[in-house]
Length: 601
Image (cartoon, rainbow, N blue to C red; front, side, top):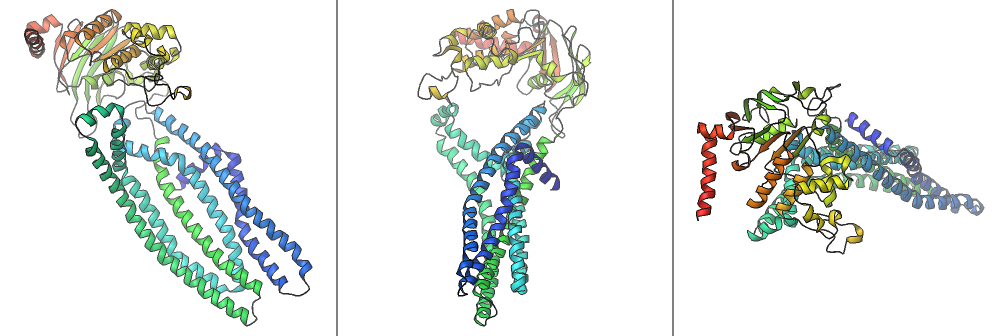
């Protein structure tokens, strides 16, 4: 807890020192104002009760008026300082969080549902918790200043009242801390349910999902699930709220009894002449102020406690080590000259999970085209992830010109790889940026971008858009000037997006390794033939890995590897594998028969 508190304080201090100090000074003033107001009121009342002392009223009356002005101005100034600090903290915390995420160079964390839950809470707490903790700490300080001032008043007037108020508040401390722990636990326990609720809600407004939602009548189905998960989260919150209502109600009643008893005593003492009218007023203010200050301290402490518990998720991410080991002084990545080699590679996504790759030994010589074929789940995409070093082998190793990938500079390695993935991204950016992000240093190089688009045979499509390469390929949001222009954003077809994704991969003009994972998925037969003809010309003389379920697209590869259950079962050229008559030959003939039967039909 201390570590979390220190981390939040350091983050807030670095984000906005001036506003931090301003809040501290304003807090001291705000804490002293109620005590000053109570004592000045006593002076005014006592002097009013004394005949002939009206001249002495001017100074305390003016001072009381000044306190009233400050009581209005200071909270507003505090609110502005807190809001300004919150904005600075949000920027700083968001930057630190996503910098930490960028240190995770692999995919394991992002494919872990527990990490996803923690990330969701970290995004919320990272922006809110530091400001909240500073605010609660200052709130506790302000209440403490007021409390000490009024406790001194009570001790001087009726010591038993100070003791009674303190004793009545003790159970509240324990109860509020228990409730704060419970609230933090509920946020974690219901995080997956809350994420599912958001998922179902997003499906109901997602334009990409709208077709199937309406065709299959899924609207009420997803709405029902969203409401079910929402009710589950609300039920957990409701249970804590009910407990809090009962606890605070009973403890508030105890405090009211103490205050009532003190008021009866003060009135009786004033009637007997032991207290003046001013004494009664300051006593009443002291009892109310003490109870209010104690309540504020308890509530702020509970809020801070809950914020610290949730801030732990943020701290866990920003202080986490990289998900893949990175050498302090990695070996520079030279241009590929000999080839890539997998040596007895075994891989699974977690302890106790099935093996996805089993003892794979494979060499991809420089300048050759290797095709990976096999049924779904055979391990093809996992092998590609290892080549890109999104994961490390569980056993064995992958080598680049004889050097283990784990010893290489990971950014340089990926800078030498071009890839189009089956699940490529369709970014909510304009056409130029959608292609240009394939090679960030060249994102403004229009000639390079158009060349890649021509190679993917999508230049004509983009040039025909309302704003050409500056056209937004989304209708999610627009530039302000084009908010009311229906042509400021467009939707592309699946095949057109496929070509944009391919152009993105081709931005790296001469990559050492080109990975093409189902590059023609979603294209018609004519477009598929055209794409593969273009890719054959593009990858000529390059080291490339091609994955496709359509075996006609890989038959011209220099070497074909057949994977089944994570192991290599066959390998060779197309002609050699057809002559062998194994699994590859059976699959090829089956697909060819399907095309033949379709043509005959």
